Length: 298
Image (cartoon, rainbow, N blue to C red; front, side):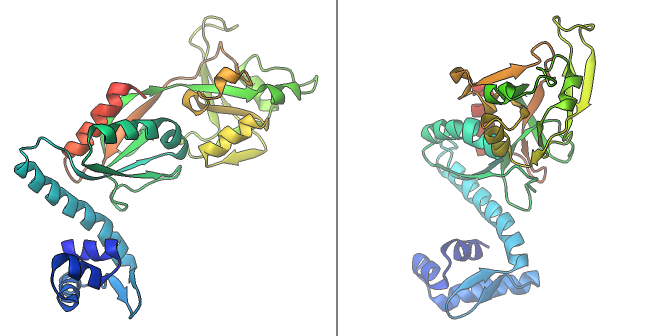
């Protein structure tokens, strides 16, 4: 398994043979023996290149994780568990990863110089086991109870628009005063949330109805997207109203170009979790990474 993983990473039997101080034939025979044991072809070979088969791609992600875990266990014994090392594969949404997670990855790597992080950003669904992810950040309620989850905080969503967009509203489309007013405005819908265009608000002390009253509206607009980065860009360019976590706009709020709408109707806070596959106990690296994020607060 180690040999197979290394061949895929290096892309060459001969390179791995030189690293292991053995022959190319010996490396090829090890991979062939693994394929016979599994009853599946893992690599497509020709004289010039190697490529993973579909089965090989699935096997590689899990095999690489297992090889890393064995190596981590061995290092833990050798150094008495004092130093974290090896790869940590982390997944998150694109906007959160770029704006909030990357700075914390930098400080985590500075604190643990032997650790390497493979940061994978995707706004869509990520299968942790299939893609070999050690830990992922999920924003929102968790639907999959088979995952090991650790809540590290909450985030707040706000209704937000650029002042440029608000200036373009016609006389018959005044500033929204209650959630129902959103039904006549251009809302930018982020489709990766389970609730999609169902936007929920709770009346605060300044609202014209009893505090605690909950209202859900089905936001409509001419733009919907599965990318938080597109929501951000569309709001900033005056294309409509967004309903997004505050951190998506933290860096531009001081400019005064954006305005928070319906301040007397805040949205319920959204939980932020770290999740790991339930097929194994979280490693020391995963626990340390979680401690690092929880200590900073999302």
